[in-house]
Image (cartoon, rainbow, N blue to C red; front, side, top):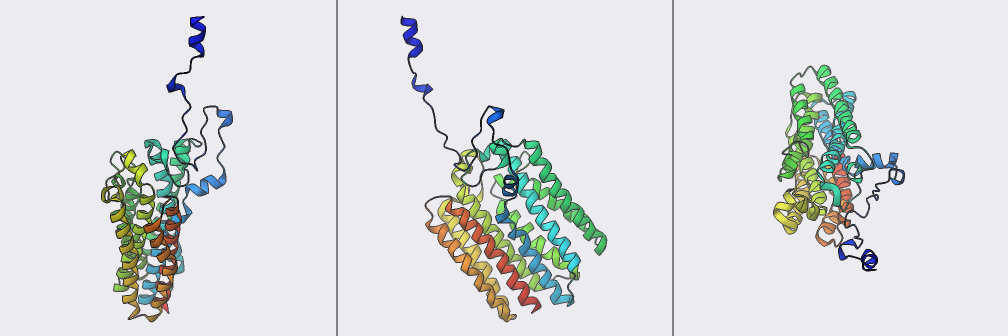
Amino acid sequence: MAGTSSKKRKHPGSKKQHSRGNPQKAPVSRDPARVEKVTLGDWIGAARLRTLPLAITPILIGTGAAILVESVFHWVIALFCLIVSVSLQIGVNFANDYSDGIRGTDDHRVGPARLTASRRVKPRAVLIVALAFFAIAGLAGLALTIRTQQWWLIAAGAVCLLAAWFYTGGKRPYGYYGLGELFVFVFFGLVATLGTTWVQALALPQEAWFGAVGAGLLACAVLLANNLRDIDQDRAAGKRTLTVLIGRTATRWVFSVFVLLAFAIAAFLALFYPIAWLTLLALLAGLPAILIVWTYRDPRELVVALGLTSLTSVAYGAFLMWAFIG
């Protein structure tokens, strides 16, 4: 009888625990028959479409600056620059999904679920997709090199690919040591914008430099909004982003300064190119993003701020391009 009663006794440790992870993440079952199948929408979501405007902005600004010099629109070259930039951005997003997923960094994310962390897709499949987009970027870059006969672009492209991978990949990813914003500014601001101008005009006017800084600042602002959303999860996972290092309040200030400084640059350019005053219309999305960053209560609200900042970026680029060619 004693043995029977002991089998029925419930132990405190056997109480069912509820997951405190990502509420949007699909539940993972150990039963293969019950695992939710991945859909095309999941793959599209993993490409993180909200970030793609950041790949378009430098191409718009760089092309506008090139037309300012050449008075000719090299649309084929511009198109291939766009392919390189967008492919790199998507490749980075899938590479982050893979690298953060296998490390466990994404196990308790607040934002949309990732493919690797959800266990619905084998990590190898996500890696293959990332490498495929890197390959597309590499081939488009090679075509630009052949077309322009600027053979040093091969080395520059290799550096871009390495930077894309080691953001969260490798044994010591720089994104885990507070350097993400610096590299984003360099590659999605300066390199992308100035590279676009150079391959079309073989010159780098001051307008391209100013526009590159503006594009880089807005790209950094998007990353700050993303990392502010994930600050608790990143801290717990040992991912020392700039936001983790400086805290929430300082991140809010840096985010605001980055956005407003980009528009200060546009206002300066407007003194010489009056159409650039229209760039201030992009603040219709930028100011609400700043407001959300300062007043949010639920980290999910920062997903909206991220999207608004990306929209601000592409509008900023479009108006500057118009100003340069108008």
